[in-house]
Length: 339
Image (cartoon, rainbow, N blue to C red; front, side):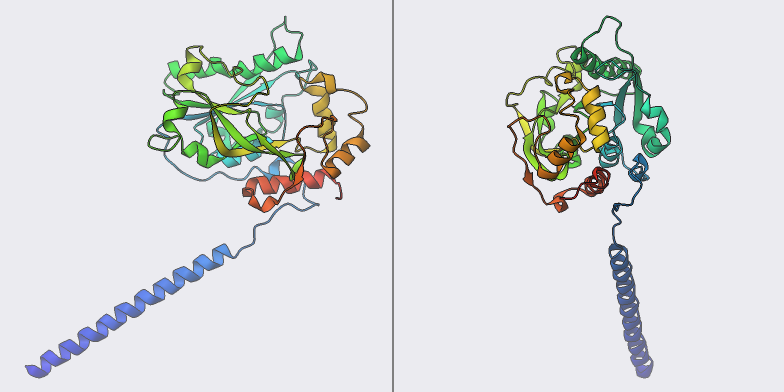
């Protein structure tokens, strides 16, 4: 009997050793697989990469619950490749993108409907996109009036979606231009119990962003024209999507470190097209659209319009999110300018 008890005790020790050995092996395997996964290099576009929207149409596979406070992103689209960067960056934190495209440029010239031309590129994000095609009122003859009417065009669809229960209230609207990219963490911090919730559901909050020009090599201070608005105040008409977009005064209140304004992240041809199309037609002059002039400005970090404000300084691009770094490298390749 005593011998049997000793044998059982001995067998129990060996079983304990065996369990410990199996557990250690499992941990080692998990660590090895994790290290292998993180050791794979991130591929950034090279100078020979194809300069197209498809560089950024990566598959959006993340699954998450809907926000308790719906986040709506309302933007205008004119064919800029940066839209896909925005969708990749914000897809997981935005509930609905209202994207408005006009049949004409702000200067009044007919244009293609780029959203239809590039529809396949937007497929990974389509479940959250509402496309809106805007045609200017016949009595509009002014570029700024066209821009303002297009910006507010999404409000009609928002009201309809609220009435049909497709958009629940309260909600918050991100009201920025396409190249004003909000930090996803800031949008997460607008949810109930998070730092910015009580402010954004009650008042307009401006978004203070790092301001870049031409590409991410040049930083031009901060930009705070973009903002978020309480949906309720838009539905009642107290606010419009144009209310806080005009003027250059210091905007209060604001959320600091709220994102990145990537202004003129375009090829030289695209910059010329923008000058000919946007509302600032006072800049549509041959000397400003001169290719050598634009090239020199990009190379040296100077303003193409000759404005003396907003000095540009070199910037370390490694501080930027990966989608923006990829886009920066593609833009630099398309600009084809040696520093």
